[in-house]
Length: 112
Length: 117
Image 1 (cartoon, rainbow over the protein chains, first blue to last red):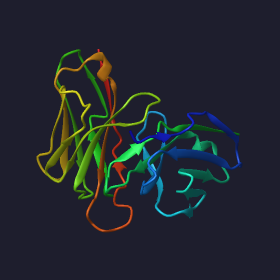
Image 2: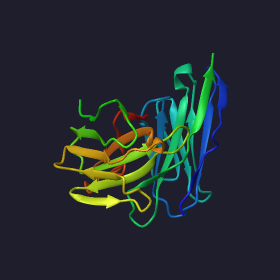
Image 3: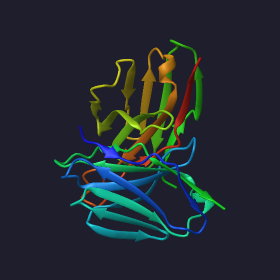
Image 4: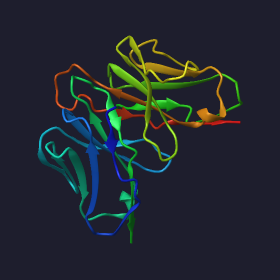
C-alpha cells in the first residue's frame, strides 16, 4: 500500500511569515510530486509540481524535494490570510503509474 | 478559457433515488477521473477513463457507474444512493502520452456536493 502522509494540522502562522508544509511518502521509486490548494467547500487547485531533487520556485511558493529522505515540502513566503486553506500533497508511484496518491492534507491558518 | 465543468454544483437526492452527475472539459484531455471526497479526507479515486478504456478501482462499490460517450463528457451514475454516499464528487482530467513534463498533472472541476436525504 503506497502511502502519502501529511500532518493534518492546523498549522497556524502570522501574516507575513513563512509557512512550511511537509509530506512524506512510502514508495521510494515515486516519480512525480504535486501540491494542491483546497479552500473549504471547493475543489483542489494545482499550485505546482516537481520531479527533480532540489527546489522549484513559483512566486511566493517553493517546493522542495528530497528523494533520499522521501519527503517533499512546500514553503509559502509572505503568508497572507488568503493562503488559509488545506494543502494536499499528491505523489505518483514508480513503474509508470499515472494515478497520484493523495495525502489527507494539512490545514493552514494565516492570522492577521 | 479551457476548463473542467461539473453540473450540477449541488445535488439533493432521496435515499435510493438514482442520480447522475456530469462533467465536461474543453482541455481536450484524454484521461478523465471521478473522485469522492468526504470532509477532512483525501480524494478517493472511484474510476477513470483513459481514452475509451474504463478503469475501475477495486474498492469502488457496484452502486457507482460511469459513462464517457465522447472525449469531452463523462458521467457518474449512483444507482441507489445511501446516506454514506453524501460527499463532494470531483471530476479531474489529465493529458497523458504527450511526452511533455507534468503530464500526470490533474485539473479539477469545481465539484458537485451531493446530499442524500
